[in-house]
Each structure stands twice: as structure tokens, then as C-alpha cells.
Image (cartoon, rainbow, N blue to C red; front, side):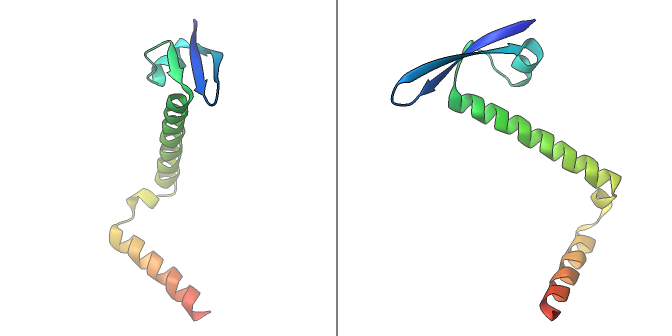
Length: 88
């Protein structure tokens, strides 16, 4: 099923935009009203993109075993890169 919510954009004049959205995305974005401001929608979408990016980074870190590195090993890697950079 597709829900429709009204997106109200405030500028010098008010415009209304009607956007169809499926029930899964409606619920997933945490939208609980038929009317939402543009800034609220941007914030919700930004949060979702950030979550997706974090999960992707976590997946890559797991596949490359970076997630298993200790803080000491990470700091040693950083120091090695800085030392190599400073000696050139």
C-alpha cells in the first residue's frame, strides 16, 4: 500500500508538495503524521543515509578484518603513516 503525505515547504511563500511513499518507508522513516515540513524530511532522510553508510563501513571493516584491530595497532598504523609522510 502507498501512503501519501504532504510536504510543506516554507520560504517567502508556502508551497505544498504531495509525495507518494510506501508503508514500509513511511514507518521506517518514523513519520507519524500526514504533514511534515521539508526540514523534518531532510533530517529523517539524512539520518537514514548516515545509518546506511555506517552499516556499510562496518560491513567493510568486518570483511577486511579492520574491526578486529586493537587501539594500539591502529595508533601504530597512524604513527607509521605520519612518520613516512614526515620523512619525505
